[in-house]
Image (cartoon, rainbow, N blue to C red):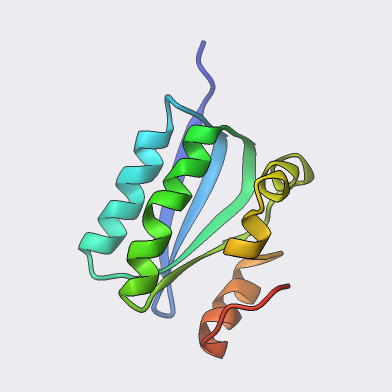
Length: 122
């Protein structure tokens, strides 16, 4: 039995929220990539990735974040990350993600960061 992974995409006040659930690894990263591509094709540039139910992330999963961040920022958008559990946060911190991405606790906090119009350390 493989590790399960699901993405729930919703729109909240002009922001796309992608809620990740389960294991994000080399097998499931293409699903995550496709979800972000769908948002971009739909003209949505402000994306929040809710990691509240993400239990594992591999380098392939991390690579998906990295592959879109520059394109989104050049288009005036961004990716904000929220709800990261300690085990996953540790991986983000080892790779310096907290200096590249806004990582906050909740979706409303991430949405507020877009309203502030900047990216700040949290």
